[in-house]
Image (tube, rainbow, N blue to C red; front, side, top):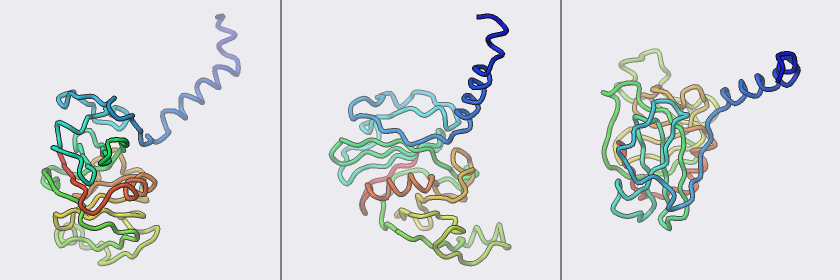
Length: 197
């Protein structure tokens, strides 16, 4: 290929396409059952483009009511349904600091289709200028859906601020793109087991 042919519109199209690809948000991935990696010690980079699929068996004894795995380090949420026919992988936001991060086993105790938001006492102490209440809608920090966990104040929820996804940006909760929490909300049940690692 000559230098002249590379400077034609095809070069501009290549550069524009590359920029669009880099700027596009990561989308949830569906992985056929049985094709997930079985090595939980695999290293993962810390950006949303370095997801790795996982198998549920190193983390859960069974898939009764489905299972959600939140990987804080790779900023990813994994979901498996009880029938072992659906596996989803979503980019997420995670807590800002380690002291805001909670790890361990919990479960979904409430599915909220129109979440409203109140800052926790510790959030209000850190940010006294924050409002005391925001109702459902586009200004709500919990987005369009929320899965309440058995730990007080902890949720997996949506966000209208898509810049937060893939970052350490929350006060303890796990955030997803609104379209992803809506999908997960439709599949998860009250009683779905959740593990944060």
